[in-house]
Amino acid sequence: MDDGCHPLPFTLRQLQYVVAIEDTGGFSRAAEHCRVSQPSLSAQVAQLEEALGVQIFERARRGVVVTTAGRAVLEQARTVLRMSADLERVAQSARDPWSATWRFGIIPTLASYILPTLAPALGRAHDGLKVVWREATTPELVEALSAGRLEAAVLALEADLGSLETCPVLEDPFLLAVGSTHRLATFTEPVGVDALDDEQLLLLEDGHCLRDQALEVCRRTHPDGEGFEATSLATLIEMVAVGEGVTLLPVVATRSVSRDPRISLLEFEAPAPFRTIGLAWRSSSTLGDQFREVARLFGEGLRAAAALPAAV
Image (cartoon, rainbow, N blue to C red; front, side):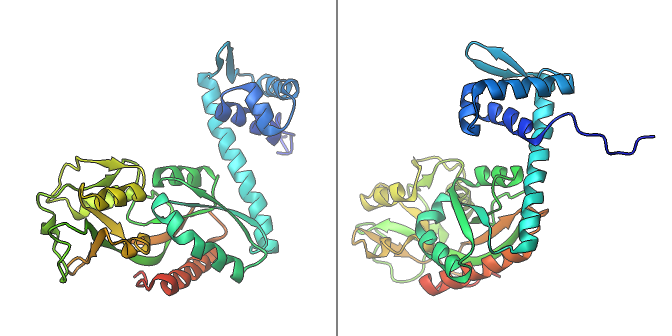
């Protein structure tokens, strides 16, 4: 009779090794990443392959190739490691969820503008908590959250976030940025989206959710989205300043721009377009209550710093 207590033919450390090999592209780099000798890592991988009865990697002169069977093993290995990390965090959360290390992500169109407010606010509220931040695009953050490499992320909730659970922090209205010599620069009343007719619209490159949000606002005047593409808001702002086009800027990114004599910022007519800044995490996370508290703290800090409206 099977009592269900047979020892497993592999260890979590072996699973970490094979995942590291795939992530780094080689045994030597994986060994360095895992802080073990390459012979030790290779021996553990060989033991795992023997125990499972499959070859996970093909050794080639230029690196390693994951076999078909190995790909299935690696997918499950990542799941096991993610669940193991969740188990560790469950135990930590049970002891004291505010005395742990959390890995948070944030999108580039928010990071430099609001992190100086968010990080201190969270530190003041929970001085035992350590947060490690990673800046990346929305698709990258969603993938990292799903894979368990992040606990939560600050991003725009209008983006495709899959099955992630979310909590809104605040609304971030869009403003129209034009050069100081532009025909619209002297307008004192809010402008309609039709003011963008025949204008060169400057956008961020693909991968930034702010690009998609700007195109959604301007879908009638610029349906194809063709034109200059930048990797950062700073580049867009400089292009606007020298008269190369116009762009949409979220209010959180306009503090320094509002003091730039080369640029005029115009409000849109009601209902003005906006994005919703929020916090996202895996629905399976045990830290949902804590993340909702974090979202509340972030909202209070940002509204005090930038006078932005609360999210619905």
